[in-house]
Length: 494
Ligand code: FES
Image 1 (cartoon, rainbow, N blue to C red):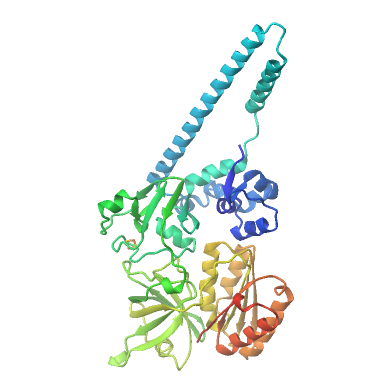
Image 2 (cartoon, rainbow, N blue to C red; image 1 turned 45 degrees about the vertical axis):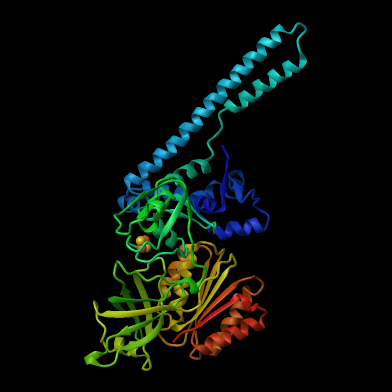
């Protein structure tokens, strides 16, 4: 039986970004009714072959595949307990539907025999009664006819058990809870700016109100909700997961950087890795009970204890990782004599396990909510905030396409070219262009020319990060090419 599903669920079923479906809505290829799309429309636009390429069928096949075996099962499926709860509720729903169907069927059979009796009793045969009887018989035959199963419906039912769908009010944002994720982890993986603090059940900042569906607790919490809060349906998102296939939660989300509190955290060095002769990856880890809440594209001040009792070294650096992993923070640091943190790092004065104080986050260079194609432009270590934004955009799954332009002014300027290659191989709508020029401004002019070739006739959002001459030259070129200021977002990086 065909049914109506949300765009979010349709994207999951088909394995395409939501932005692609939203574009089809705008082009009139998909007609919505109350925000829902009919599965018949989806099947018309995405025939079976395409479903098997990137959608749930592929995931199901992978789960069955012995080669992936246990690892995939652990990652994709929730715990046995949660799975049992979701299956139980799904079975309840199905039993309910079955009971109703049986009652309707009995009613129709009764009506048919009553009609047959009345026709018999009518002396000269009543034409209207005969027509009604025929209509009833034909309708019943059609309803009982064997039809092939709608594959999308089967997949939708499976998807409901494997990954619950959560809708947030009042924003209307939606996300899936997969595997062993809590509500908070799943929301963050989907790129949402949920309210939270400790992430381990002790601060109470992640309180949400369950207004429909069921949840189950996944860990012990120190924070005690009041009886009144419990009665109103409040739970801690960091300590609960979805126990029903669909869930509606009431919660406040951050609208932008101004809603993210300033924090001070003492993290430790997890790793230092050479990315090039003059570029290092600094991987910091926060304590389990003190995670950093930030938005993709923001920066932190890093503070290192001075060597030999000297002054502390401090410098502002953009975060290169995704907010969905709020404990593991990455930074790309270039050799720079004017940067005390870089000096200490390149002199070997920073070792695994050393303490680093973090202050922040700061910065307004964050992703806007939009369904435009996204264009990212970076110069050298300006790739750090750009990488964070790309990872966030991938979590949000809203952009119909993404293009990355990366200029190197130093021999090791493309220190993560492999990452770009991996994105472009794994993601259909991702393209990247690497360029080199000793001079940042002249490299920016060539970049504008490359963008002009295929992007200026599309409405795109541009995110630009790098040294000041690069950013300014690119902004001038894009503005001269007619790109409105509202679609230009930029950040100067060291
Ligand atoms: S984030 Fe602190 S209790 Fe959930």
